Length: 223
Image (tube, rainbow, N blue to C red):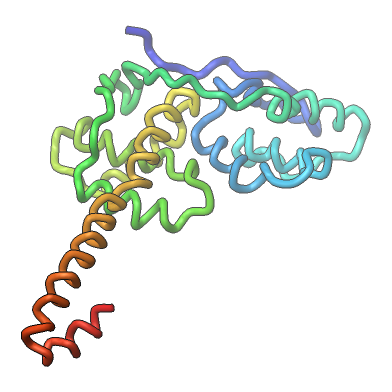
């Protein structure tokens, strides 16, 4: 098995300050990716704030820079790949993740429990603007019982999500998006079943109404 690690990233200097910056999608963390799609990735690329993008990619290293041609060239050299490299993720799920100072075997995602699905759908998906912003918590909800060998607990999953946010997005995305799509559809089948049940019940009650007119008031309240 191969240990999961970050690439070396790009060494750069801006405003006289040396720092490292991701130079491709494989070097981007989950947290950085989510911030890009929720805070930066809207509107015409020509009108976007590329200093803000650098701030996201360096986790807050820069809020301003001297307005020089040299700095502008450096800035675009550092972050231009975000708009030129397609954000296409491998559908193949990783076999292991390096988390909490050890290798964690990742089983093929199956169905989440009812409780896990409810928390993911109600507390996160339904309150978010973009489905993908919930990638870290989806994976954490799935992995927390596996990693800790204990029952699912949403607060412990939320703590785990903070660690998962620092992992490479290209490893976490396939797991998280799979789980999010499943959770997004959670409850739809049972809702349709309930709708069919109500229709069937109304038909039965209408037949009963022929022999017991007083039932009409109750039947009307269900329609």
